[in-house]
Amino acid sequence: MATLGEVLIDLLEGYGVDHVFGIPGVHTVELYRGLAASRIRHVTPRHEQGAGFMADGYARVSGKPGVCLIITGPGMTNIATALGQAYADSVPMLVISSVNARTQLGKGNGHLHELPSQQGLVAGLTAFSHTLMQAEDLPAVLARAFAVFDSTRPRPVHIEIPLDVITADASALARQAPARSRRPVASQVSIDDAAALLSRSRRPLILAGGGAVHAAAALQGLAELLQAPTALTINAKGLLPPRHPLLLGSTQSTGPVRALAREADVVLAVGTELGETDYDTVFDGGFALGGALIRVDIEAAQLSRNFAPACTVLGDSADALQRLTDSVRRIPAPHAIAAPGDAPWGTGRVHAVREALEAGWDPALRAQRHYLQTVLDELPDTLFVGDSTQPVYQGNLAIDMPGPRRWFNSSTGYGTLGYGLPAAIGAQLAAPGRHVVSLIGDGGLQFTLPELASAVEARLPVIVLLWNNQGYGEIKRYMQQRGIAQIGVDIYTPDFQMLARGFGCDSCRADDAESLRRALRQAAGSARDRPLLIETSEAQWLRAWQSTLRST
Ligand SMILES: Cc1ncc(C[n+]2csc(CCOP(=O)(O)OP(=O)(O)O)c2C)c(N)n1
Ligand SMILES: [Mg+2]
Image (cartoon, rainbow, N blue to C red; front, top):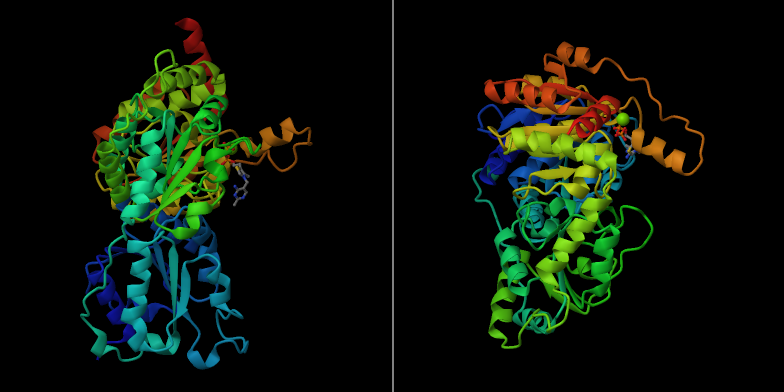
């Protein structure tokens, strides 16, 4: 006989799952029975929030769902924050948990790990949460989960399995073929309508988001055909290469780009909800669109979020962008060609915006951009996995990446602290052989610091760049700006380097560009199988950077 727990592992393997993240408990050991005989690697975090963030980082880099095995009750309350982050950023994640036996559900008899309604807790954080009441339903429920990952806006999915179902005989279900689906494509009428609008445009603008992360070539092709300035959300960084003459970067919250957005006569928004953490990071409601808005999205509800569209295209973004390009090419009207005497729109306007932004960046931004640029210069293949800290915000604004899926962080969407280290662990598992850098502050790192032990155990060479300002710097700045007494923001910070060594990691300090380069060069030059923590003092980095400026 094969139990449902064993068959589950077999079916997951059939779906291409190669990693699972979880902490076993008496409620889930039967989910683990089949693991040893499979090719799936189990990675053990030190807290279920870490499991969720690891699965998130793994998913964003690999494009495949991150899978977690979680115990009833406290395991699920612990992973809830990670579900919130993945939900907000459209990350595919499959959380499989136990739940009390079928006859005990909802009774409140005080069984181990019991919640009044575990499903009620998770329902608002997932595309769906399903209680598997009978073993035979498993293949259909997995098919439903993968349909969410494959063919609509990806979101976390939760499947909870009652204790008596996990051990049920499920031999009859073994070796079922996985049910996969494709992304739906847009109707031709919608493509033609959008192409007609675009072809009449004199001042087009493209806004691309994480929903276009697989559509780099098609996006670039259409941007070049239209000569359209193109802004990328943080999750879309890398869709146009750095220094591309039409690339505005991720600068939608800045004055010059807002002015451009108001002047554009047609705006094509692709795979973006036009949400606050990308378009209004200054929280003043100042992002406005002057022209007709075309929206392309895989999910119908996204087509009208935040800004009402004049025209909608419901379907896969890569397909839609390619067909829009073909359609616009077939329309004879000259598109986006400036009339004589007009200021050049496309590349000319982007150049002017870039120059204005460059002249306006404050010294703190420049110094922190230099910090990130030093890493990119030294390790050009780096993937940056960020928390919510100063250099992440500055990089969000002022760093362009050479490819997609290489810059993401928890300052977008849900905006939780503690993401940067465990998500980098997941990213490193999805990209072995690449340099994965976790960008994290002293506050954020103290949320999930024990995950250093998980990285050591999994023998991962993650590089943790710790930006230390002995406090919740961003919030301190807010309090200062608003004239509020600074309470709760100057936090005690431990000796991180000593702690890192205690966890079995390497660690060093780098307070200027030369010592950072040296540390990274050493890290790159050796075959490391454990994390390296590099600590930088904000104050010292700024001082060192200012003194280099004075001496040049
Ligand atoms: C779970 C959670 N709690 C609180 C916050 C509010 N918050 C946002 S940024 C920040 C400061 C983080 O400090 P640190 O990681 O040291 O970065 P710094 O701002 O100092 O660069 C805080 C407390 C949050 N985003 N998430
Ligand atoms: Mg700090």
